[in-house]
Structures are given as C-alpha cells and as structure tokens.
Image (cartoon, rainbow, N blue to C red; front, side, top):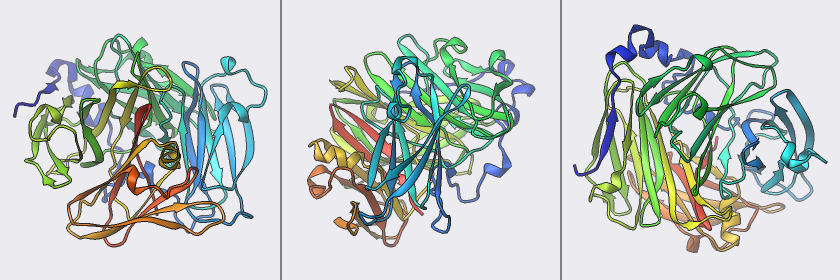
Length: 478
C-alpha cells in the first residue's frame, strides 16, 4: 500500500508490569456489553417517563458560552409543550437552574440567556444536566468556534471514558472536561497513549472532582508537544461524564463527548475525499498485544480493496486512506473499522476544512468519534434542517452494514403536524446512501429529522457544508 501509516510503539521499559493494559487502561466489566453498544448514544426507552442528558461542556472560558439544543423525536401538537429542566454546573457546583418550554421540533437555548445578567467574559467553564419530561427527547451542545456544529450530550455516566484524538503541538490546545453530576465526590486518573509513547502524569492521578462540579484540564500543561494523543479517564471513586475541546489556530474548535466503553467495530457513515478537506483516522490500541484492524471503504458503487492496519500494543496509529489511490478523489464514502478476533480499540475521525473560512474567522475542525451502534431509528437535532433553510449543502450518509436490504425513510417533525416523509429510498445490503440538499427541499428549519429503517439496522451521519463545514454522528433512536 502506498498510504502512509504511522505506528508508534512503546518501549518495553516504558510500559512495564505496572503499566500493563489491564491496569493502565482498565477494562471495566460492567461496561463491556455483548452487543458492542456504545451506551452514551442510547436514548431513554419509550417505557421511561422522561429523558436525562449530561453535557460536560456548554461554556468554556477559552471560547465563551455556547448553546444547548433540545429536540423532540415525536410529533406534538402546538398546544403541547415539553418541559426541559436545565441545571448549569460550574467548578464550584450548581450555578443556575431553569425550566424551559420546548414546543418545536428542535429548540436552541443560549447559555448566556439561561444565566440572566451574567457577563459572558466572567463566566467559568460550565456543564449541564438537561431533564426532559417526555421519552425520546434529544439534547446536544455547541460552543463558539466550532462553526455551528453540535455534539451529542450523554445519557450515560460511568467510571471509565475514552477519547480518541487530541493534540498539544504548537498552535493546538486540547482540554478535558470532567463532570461529576452526583452528590458524592469522584477521584479520577488521566492516562494517555501518544505519538511519543505512553504518558501517566503524576499531577493527573487522583484528581478530585467535587459533587456537582465540572473540572477543566488543559492537557498542554502536562503532556506537551504531542501530535496525537488518546485519553483514558478512570474514576477510582465515583462516576463521571467526560468531554473534550480541541482548538487549532486558524482551523477551528471541535467539541466531543467520550465513549464509556471499548468496542471491536466502529462505523463512519460519511467521509469525503476532496481538495477542500483533510481527513485522518486515529486508531488506538490500549491492549497488551498488537491488533490488526480491517478497514473497509464503501463507495456509492461498491467496496474497494480493504486496508490492513497493524497497531502495536499500547500504541496509536494515524491513517489517511486518501493517500492510497483506491479511493477516487472528490468522492464520498463510508468507513468500517473492525478487529476479527474481537479485540477492543478506540477509533475517531479528525477532519479539517482546508480552504473555506468559517463564520468565526477560522477553518472548521471536526472530530467524529464514530458509531459503535446500529439502529432502526436515528435522529438529527435540527442542524440539517436549519442548514437546508439557509441554502447550505447538507449531506446525510447512511450505511447498511447487514446482509438484508431495507427501506430508509427520512421524516421531518414540525410543531403541530404529523411526521412528514420527505424521502424514501431502498438501500441494498452492505451498501451506503448519500442524501444531498436537493433531496431535502421540504425540510423546514427547526425540524427534528427522524430517519427510520424498515428491515435492517443502519448507521447515520450528517455533514453540513456552509461557511466551513461540520459533521456529526446522528443520535440513536429506540
């Protein structure tokens, strides 16, 4: 293969018995599900009375206050409003609490408006708990500099979290948000696999995160000049929610939420090879033995020859499939990364806009954690609808990884109306579907977008090309 694959192994002396995989990156048994489901993406089931979401970062001192978006997955009459109770948490604990009426498909709230007369320049970094009094509601968050892209909040809390990519080279800044929504304090360790080996900074062991507080860790102060790094956050005591903010000068800011488990298969339904985008996959192997990752790229007209990526034990690999001529230029594709022997790993996709400035003055940076889950229902939080209304180029990538053909139905949920079908297409087994703006003319701004599959579970990702671009794995339905 002509593609450049950079694999960074760890010297045996750096690892040692004390840094074995089971201890350095402990595999919490309760988080390893037989189905490989990434529980942070699951919605509350329809049998529940409400939806509870944890947002580890909704305001950051380095970039300012962001927004919280609440989306309703079911059609509702104009006379019926859901109630979202938003509790904002600062490093000192609870800072504000408000009840908000949500009457539309998707409704966005500015954090600064939730705080009344607060001065944005004086705001600390904030996290949020959002409780909606109906099942199947979705909550996402964004912060300034991300160019209008959102990241899902989490319905999961747990003792172990994984973040696939970060960087602390000159011009880059990565911070970790540790959010403890519980009444008991948590005690947390941060460990890293980087392009220069493993790192276990003494100052990041045994960090206290007080009850109801959010704590921001600037990684550049502890792990300096690393081009790429993968982070494991392990709570010795208590449970937490973990997010990451990555900023690159002249490119933009990306906000992401960690995964509470490792899995053996990751899906990326929509990637793009073109002159305006630079994309790179980051594969992290936290195990005590090497793994071989099978990487399959699915084009609109079929698969290409699979890639084989070897990742040594306790190592990170940077992989750019576009450096190989197997994927044609100016094409979109889906990517599936898996390990045949069931070994668990971490995968993420970092993409950058290389030409078009974003509305914030930089270029767009997006980090997508991939999906470890397939489902027969997915939801977008209104970003695609809003982008379509302002004539942005919206792409929705849909992958059917199973040997069963299925119909894919895209619906718009607007206030006071029944769900409106705006597109229905047949998706063959093992194939992908790329839906563009021309197929979404009937999508009104503020709508919640619901995507259903009739026979086989699918995976969905949205991609918005505006003044820059953004990409988000869609929310998993019931």
